[in-house]
Image 1 (spheres, rainbow, N blue to C red):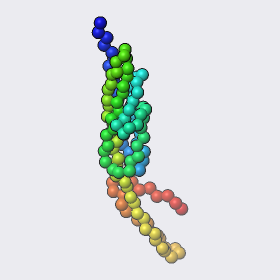
Image 2 (image 1 turned 180 degrees about the vertical axis):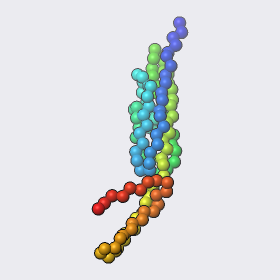
Image 3 (image 1 turned 90 degrees about the vertical axis):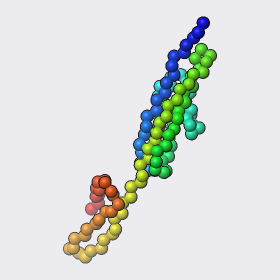
Length: 117
């Protein structure tokens, strides 16, 4: 008698975050098994800090025991950390009834919104 266990599958979707945000990767599809991650964590999701810009890969391994046989599958998710954005606005001193102009620098390719009053 040959017993063929059903296939084991796991999926991890890629995540993009900004610098200094926390990235959360979630593994799905591992039914009735346990998940371990390449960074030593266990469970369906891992949260990793994004302290350096770049792309990082984390592999999840699903292990399921069926009919006395352990079957496994892996899935890899990437965390892409975008570089930090910095903006600078210098203070301005004017006399009464003059117009003050504030200038923001350092925001390349983005949109600047002003608040205050």
